[in-house]
Amino acid sequence: LSASDKEKRGALVVVEGLDRAGKSSQCELLYKSLLGMNYKAKYIRFPDRSTPIGKQIDSYLRGQSQLDDHSIHLLFSANRWELAQSIHEYIANGTTVIVDRYSYSGAVYSAAKGNPNLSLHWAWQPEVGLPRPDLCLFLSISPEEAAKRGGYGVERYETDSMQKRVRELFLSLLDLPHNDEICVIDAGQSVDEVAQDILDPVLECMKNVDSIGPLKK
Ligand code: T5A
Ligand code: NA
Image (cartoon, rainbow, N blue to C red; front, side, top):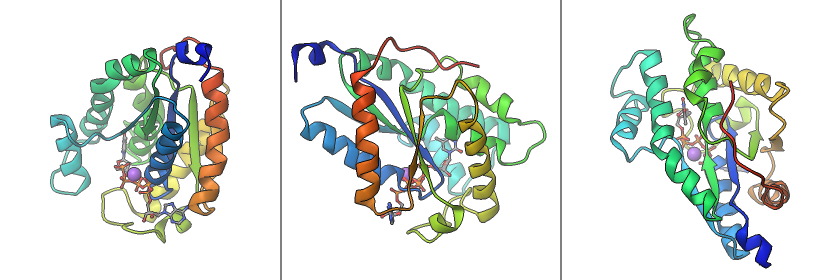
């Protein structure tokens, strides 16, 4: 690494997509690739099921507890706020942070439930002010392809109707004018092909980081 690379802050890279799109597999590979190139990197995932809030989320997702749609929504968001400060600290010390699901999942899954009092706009508000991603990789896959992959159907939101609405809402977010940091990746390819498509935009983003801002309304 050159001297100027060492002084640069790390990038905040978010990976999003439907259940079984391959996010965790790709985050793991990206993390290892960056370390292999001598970059400082950190991999975190949401929900972080290890914290007290995360344990409530885990129990809800497994169908072991019931919660009001707004309550569980706010717990998912609180789970991100728990780590907001440490994300800032990693980035400031030059570590690129790879995040497996973030605010986009947060807003989209809750809004996809069809509760008339829980719009996408409402769902986005608790995310406002969290560290804003420099790059969001959207792993694009059809609900039908995703459902063929291992383990699908176990947790609460892994149904065809839910995943279809989630995909529609994800796609509607891509169209918003301020969302130019979103990069769509064809996640229906092999694991290696997807990994190759991801690496270039990430390295490009890491070269061009500027000051980090908050997520906007
Ligand atoms: N949620 C989450 C909210 O409602 N609000 C929120 O704020 C947040 C953060 C759990 C649920 O919570 C919801 C969304 C979810 O419904 P989670 O813990 O991220 O979220 O879910 P997981 O079950 O851990 O992960 P996913 O189901 O999202 O799967 P991934 O990470 O996309 O996929 P991955 O990499 O684990 O791979 C799945 C399977 O596919 C295979 C893998 O080997 C594995 O078997 N696979 C491939 N097969 C063929 N080709 C490829 N390219 C493949 N890539 C992976
Ligand atoms: Na995952």
